[in-house]
Length: 495
Image (cartoon, rainbow, N blue to C red; front, side, top):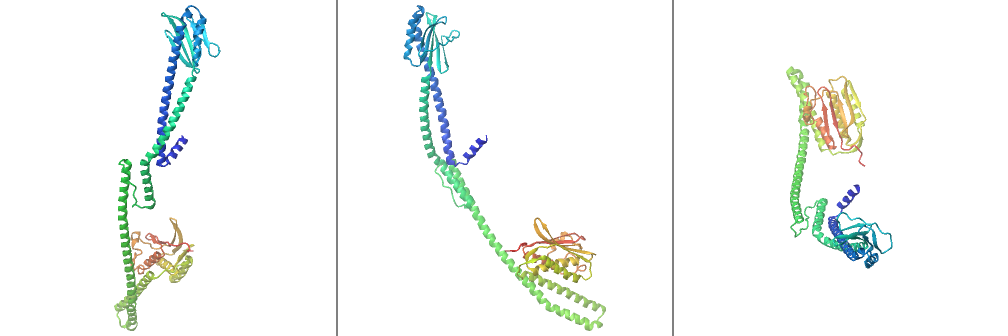
């Protein structure tokens, strides 16, 4: 079974030319073998019938010539009659027997013991049998309607063997000549079938390998299934080429539009950054005037002001202070957008420790537990990454103010096989349904009366992380703290 499957696989791997040739040769060979077998079988049967008929005639002649010898009991005359069989080289032996089955006269080409006389069944006048390479025939000798004896003749089949060999040689020659003719004709006719298919297969390989839909298979003058297949294949290539050209045009147009939009966005972003920087910078001078005159008013004319006037002056001072912080944050955000990265292989643990030390001094005597894990090194801008840690950790310090003790943790983890740095605290947290606003400019998730701030710090952090090719996100729950996660594009030094 396994060998048969192997042969089938080998045939399937042949080219169509070879398959057609082998198929034609196998069909022709099978047909010729069947025809030769039928002819040989018929010839053997016909020759045997001819032998039986000839031996039967010889038995009749011997029987007719032996009637007188049997009636007059003259064995010598019967033996002379049998000796005439010496002219037939195929006769091995012959015998004449009386009506009672007793041996009367015999003939042997080569001396041997006589075979027992076979019996005839019923009213049979003659019977024959092929056995042991011989034809054995027995016939009654009848005179005036009465059996007077029996003739028994044995003939060898050597002539049949020689005749079969001659026929086999002739049939072998005919078979070889026929197969050679079939091979030549098959080789010629397979071109009309295989050549177009081979060309079609070559074109299909070119299309598959090179994605070149402009090639076409060579057409044929025939209108059979192969011609229809080639025509349909070329038509399909034409349709694909049209669609590919349309897609290429659409792709080029889309790329051009994307380039235009990108250029427009970059121009708008630069204009916006320049505008933000200019506005923030230009607001500093009038803001300083307001702060200066408010301080002078409070110092020089504070005694003359009513309590309500003093409260108003205090609100002006507080508002100008908050506006000053907002201007500083806007300038920092604009600076991040305009600043080029100065990448350097930097240990993040050192940056985080520096920020923690600064925040410890700013936090005064608050009970804060700092937990710093083993952070990786990264190819980053040290100044900008320090600002990331400062903004995130100062946020944690601010929003853990109601906690005693406050717990702020810095560490690293892996998310889906990616190295991630996190800042986690046990502060007031926030509602995750507002997380989309978290990194927007001037977006706040808590009232300014509860927690001070400008709403620009996290936007600055996001911009720095994006400039490094990373991403940032947060997870939190109200009154259960918050965690900020970020990644950096490069975690390995560039060689």
